[in-house]
Length: 258
Image (cartoon, rainbow, N blue to C red; front, side):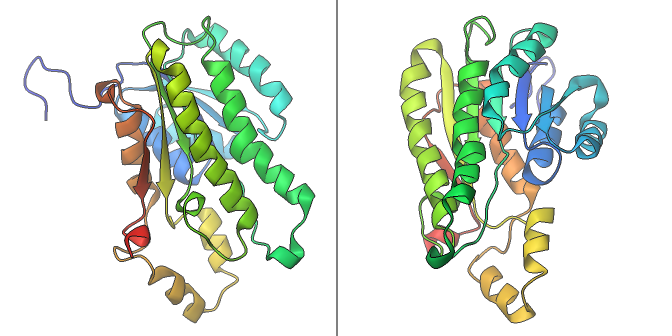
């Protein structure tokens, strides 16, 4: 709790942040947490119904909705330029959108891998390029947060393509942190472990209880919730953590400590 007349810790003061993957899961939880801490939001996603529900939960008065398929990377720049013309300068970006597909090596397909690259990696870089234009981004700096995965650092059978895209995202973020530091733009990543979302629930529906138990037992603190990731995201994006850049914060309930 802040003292009288003191600014609360992790207060965004109405600054505009772009959040992708905002229609459900981790992206929705991050949007709600940022709005709770005073951020104004540009919510990006493909599901209009889901985006409207996120805006309702976060507060419709602080949200702008942008329906967009991030796989169409050529459209990202123009769409964000248009949004910034209506909101004013942007303070930050949280790229939470991502796609995955489980395929063992003998079923690997280049076309599905390219689709993961487009959303998980290329779209993140194009979003960063677009929001950090000097006529778009806040002159006094801001923050970029790319949601990676523990699988960018550790292996998982059947996930070679997904692991590759998330590992590349981690490397790209470190390079961006160095490049953009001179403009006071911080770049960090979050690497969640298994988080309970509609996507993971759908994946678990195809497994028997023994398989689910085996997966969950790998997490000493249990499976995470979207809110666990959202709180860490707010911390790394906030103006008050202005001296943190180029790091990857692992949020995995002890999974990688085994």
